[in-house]
Figure 1 (cartoon, rainbow, N blue to C red):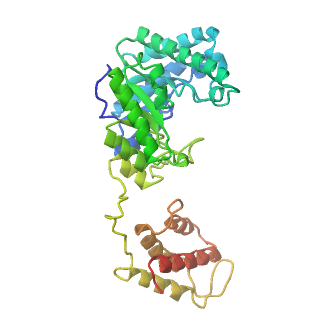
Figure 2: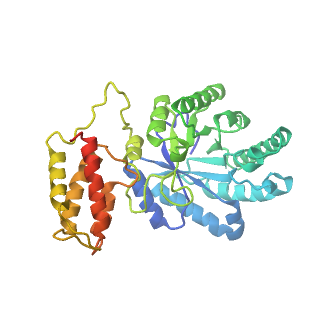
Length: 386
């Protein structure tokens, strides 16, 4: 796509390029539920060197599959993470040029191409982070950006029409390639809202300086205190389009990134809500705390649990006079009140444990009973029942 002055229509997500179009269509069907309309994917020059045209054919199929689903693609040609120092040497450039030419020749006329990303996070690697001294760091830094600028120049020479960006690790890196790109991109995993705002303002300042639009094309990480619902809200306030990381909960980063499980369920509904523009209230002057016991449902749930748990005798799989289905029904009543009232942690929802036991022919009643006692105590405490 030709460079635009406004990318506010973009609601993007990072994603892994997959070979099976059926899986891609399945995953994109989840993305489209939330109005996500663009994916940013990592390419791999080593795989190209192994597979040749088969790799490029896979890429074209992926882009066309995405386009057929109304989703644009941002392919990343090179990756700064785990960067092989050999990539930065002069003798690697012919290999880089062959890969770049193969990708550009294949995609420049594809309507599903939104823009090229020359390199992901160029200085985010141990060559920089673990450099033994400042002089070494500066020398490597210069080599990295010399390589990035070479790739940008090659892309533009091969395709002067379509849009180009660089996935900068930090907003402060923007200057190093701003003159060569059409869109200024930055990443931000700041642990505080003040940090998110500072990065956004730095990027927007660079955008004004160079007269180019700004995109955050990688953000949101649970393990970095960079929550989806807070970060997206701030970026929306600044009018900065974004690509969150990551569409699917899979692979190495699955425990700290991702929206959807393969079956289409979500990790946290607050993530999905934020993507569509609905955010949690954090104003103490406005918040109305839930009151699950308003109609005495909490009292009723406790009454059921007490009746079932009283006078039962321990056994491996059952308690005298106590049926698993009856106790699980009572547990579900209590668990639903606690979850709906946001009164329990939801990393492993209580109802997920109940569903797990319901699938078993003979659930261990000792575990179920202990869980029932735990639910009862939590319900009493959170609903202030004496």
